[in-house]
Length: 482
Image 1 (cartoon, rainbow, N blue to C red):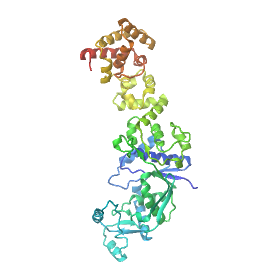
Image 2: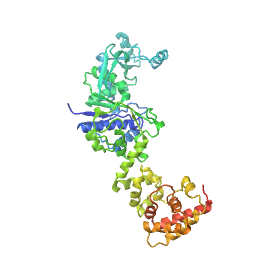
Image 3: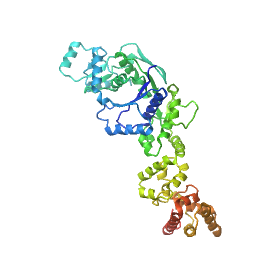
Image 4: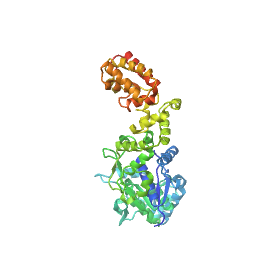
């Protein structure tokens, strides 16, 4: 077989959707496995909806995911003359014809269809006498260019995922190739591009299966060899409906903003339709590129499980080295409004990150649940206050503990624990009561790393200050702030 050449062709009418990202990933993996070429093409002929900033966002998302391309990015908007030339060639060869039906005419015919039957173009201009056709063209009557679909026979193809797919030609309408404003339709642009870029395999979503017979007809009419087609199953939400905004975030950028790591998202997307030969769940991109098999992609639609993604992200997060993790945490904290001066002056920043790392599922967790470890500007969670600060004596115990800790010459985990337990024994209370109350005072949360490890990374001064602050808060707000 000649060199494998695949392409990913997003439209810059929106951000990179996770479904599109999976398509890009499968193309990339296939190209890398086969020592082929991965082409990036921007399908931006929809002038009203295509935005340059969306093109930039798509490219940034691709780079963030690590899906580097070998050729491109090519822009369809730079190739309009090529599409018009191909349309003219198809007209001259009799495979296409001008259609003068107005949008109003077509809508009127569509509205007259009854019985729930799908409407398709009735071929009004297909067999128009050539003299009349030339007269209208000479008069400059607006028109589109339609493909002349064979009236009999069938069009089929062997899909690498779904097997043999065949459609009767009589079920295919004479579809538009070129709009009246000279802009190509998807069917014309994609075939021209794939022919010119020598694409050998077209790997795209299953929602394009219905487009494929039309495009095969254009390939054949152009005298070009057909690529191999592989259509990927759809990605569904947890309710098994097609993934959309009602399910939450759907773009790659949104998951990046939520603190998902690129390697975790790539790993997660790869498994939405493909299972590695060894059944591994955690599989880095490089390992995937050595194992990926397009023929092994499932026919079944995949379900996007946000909880599974969060779990997978936590696995990657825990495996990060401090050299990689610390800058990511710094960026997240600054993004959340924590001043860089606080971060820079933190005496035990890396130690704090190390302590929190096993408990975090996303980078966002460092600035939310872990906020109190990096700044004094945090609040006490209402549920934690209600559960662990309801005893009227808590304020006094916190103040007493602050005084005892302040006098310590050494601030180790062993000594701070002994100090707290000594206080509880003297007052005849359970250690858990003060441990939980102290955890809320120091972190604002009811769940945190081990209390005495928390004291260690906060340091003696900050620990004492937070205990005093909590005691004051309780006295001013009443015995039961809930």
